[in-house]
Image (cartoon, rainbow, N blue to C red; front, side):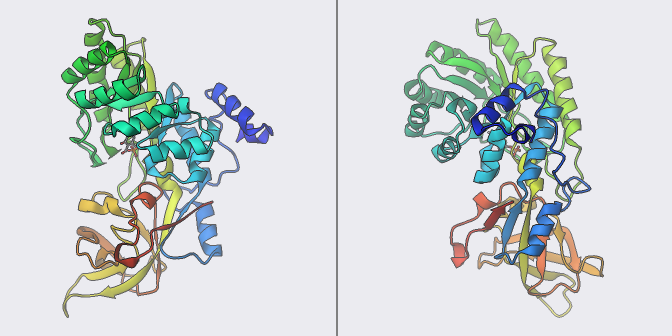
Length: 416
Ligand SMILES: Cc1ncc(COP(=O)(O)O)c(C=O)c1O
C-alpha cells in the first residue's frame, strides 16, 4: 500500500487514503501475488497450506487479495463509496486492512458495529443496513454514533424515528433478482410506490430522507438487473422530488461475483454496466453512489482445506460414489443449500480418471448433502484421508459454521 510505504501513522494513513482515494489508492500494490486466472488458487495460500499442518477443515484467506479486490473495485467505480458488507467475512485482519484502505462498512447487528468500532473505524463510516432491527439495537447503534439506517416498512421507520432521531435513512426497494445464484429477494425491500410514501413519512418524522437502496441478489450473473433496478430508483427520485424531497443517495448493494464453477464476467463489465445505467437514468445529475460488496471482495481470497472421511457406494453396481468430506452444510458450506453455490474442488489425484459423485458432509443429518443433483466428477483414486481444496470459499463460510453441531468444531480459519 502506498500510504504504508510512505511510513505514515495509522491515523495519517487513514486520512491520506480517504482524501486521495481516487488518484492514489487504486494503485494496486505491486507485491501482491495474484493467481493467474481470477478465482484460481492464490499463490500465498498454496504456500501457506504446503508449509503448515493445519487442523481440518480450515479456511486460509490471503488478505492481500482482499486488498487487491477492494482496490480494483475503487478503480472500476471511482465515483462510488464502498461499504464492505461485514457479514461476508468479519475476520479482524480483513476489517482492519479494508479500514486502512479507506473502506466504509455495512453492518447487520450490534456485534458487527462493535467489531468495526473496536478496530478503529469511526461511526461515520458505518451503516446499519439490516432492515430488520430490534428497537434496543437501533438505540444502541445510535448511542455508539451510528447515524445511517436502512428500512423498508412503517414499523421499522417508527422504531428508527424514536431511537435514532434525525438519522439519515434510506429505503430498500424490492427488485428482480432473477439470475442471482444466491437470491435475496422477497424477504427485504418494499414496492417503490410504498417507498415513496415511507420516505415522505420519514421526512415528516424529522428523519433525513437520504436515499434508496436495492440488492439484485448475491452472485448476480445477469448484468442487466442493475439497469432495471437503477431505472426504478431514478423514477422514484423524480416522483418524490415533486413532493419536495430531494433524495441524494443510491445504494447499489452487492451482487458482484466470486468465481465458482461457472465462468463470470470480469468486474470491469459489471462496473461499466452500472455506470452506463446510472448515466442513462440519471443523466449528469448523478446522486451519491454507495456499493456494498461482500462476496466479490473476499470470496476468491479464501481456500478451505478439507479431508475425505469416506468414499462409498450404495449398491454393488452403483455408478455414483458418495464422497463424504469433513466439512458440510453445517460447518461452513451453507450456501450449498438447494445446491445454489457450486464450489470448485482440487484433489491430489486431479488429471487421473474420474467418475460421478455425490458430495456430502460428515454429520448425521441427511440434509447435509452438498451436491447430489448437480453433476460433479472426482478422481476414482480419491480415498479417505486425502486432502481436498475448496476454492473461492472466503465469503459466507466461517460465520455460517455451527458451533458444535454433532460435536464437530466450528470451521478453523486463518488470515495471512
Ligand atoms: C444489505 C446487504 N448488502 C450487501 C450484501 C453483500 O452482498 P454480496 O455478498 O452479494 O456482495 C448483503 C448480502 O447479504 C446484504 O444483505
